[in-house]
Length: 460
Picture 1 (cartoon, rainbow, N blue to C red):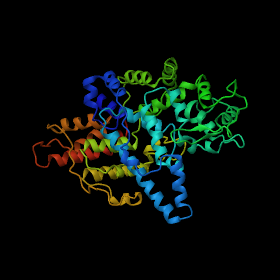
Picture 2 (tube, rainbow, N blue to C red):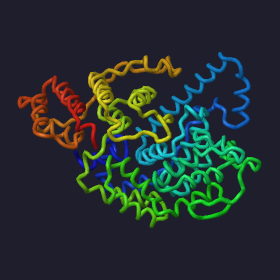
Picture 3 (cartoon, rainbow, N blue to C red):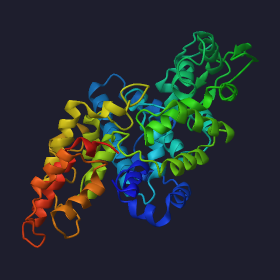
Picture 4 (cartoon, rainbow, N blue to C red):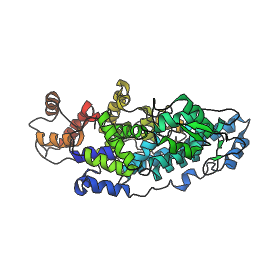
């Protein structure tokens, strides 16, 4: 696979940035990516959903005890959620420099706050936009801000955590899943951390401590004694030796290696500590240093990258991306609704036999110019959405003999090809292939479809 194409897929969701990476060089491309400004969601999407605490209470009161109204309200909010999903997918697919959205997706799967439990679209979006605005910022400061979002404290039960009855859920996940990873803290740290987080309640814009519910007695946290609140606790956590390695491992897994070496994890983790947990210089170092290494094939594509790559390669521009959201949900990658607090596992989780078959069925549909069934929209509240049943697909290729055309597509689609696969490719596009023949394009699409189903296409 062409190196620029490989990194276009890793730093975005298709090969559409490959020419820009080649022209600018990886370092300038990254610097331009870092300077992009985050766009907020169009106001009409959230116009009818409650935003303030008073709004939410009023809505709950208005439907209380009325099952029909409750169902109607849930249906309405579900429609808004799918509009948010579609908006985000559109943005990931169309941004000139999509690295900010790739990082937002990373943080989205790190500081998990799923809709199925939070149940307030405005809180879900506010949390998501915080991650977008701080995608390349400071990891320590972002952790502090994430703890102030309504979505996080509701999802991790801290609204039930008071001095009269401690709930350790947020305290535990702050250490296990947000910062240090398992084995780098004690149960005592979790118990005492819950005291420091007790009394956090939801607010209109961010959480706040309620004096009557918070615990102001001194406690010991990682060897330090005092009356610590969320920001103080985060500062103490980031003094720990293990602090940089958990997030560095996750970043390497997200972008390059499903199984990064401990040597790389510590090498880049030590650099992150030197940079005082600033993410931008870490990403610049990782990507520029790993760019020239022969790392193609070290990572399984996530479902979103898989389908957006197909859209770009086949020039599909009329897809209703609520259907895209539904497809990736089938594949286990439900935006705003991860299966649990650990988020999507990635790696081999993306390529079970069932998921592989789903990918191949989608490839067959698309390569025959057909869309997935509109019935998929039935339970989203969008039964009457604009829908293209068929596509005018177009695989771009330069005219040449069979081996030249095969090589073109290989460089775009496959990280490697063994002898047996090469023979299969040449049996589809034979030596007597004529690029001027009226059916030449159909033959190339058959070749393209075959490549989509190879194990090599699932890897980047």
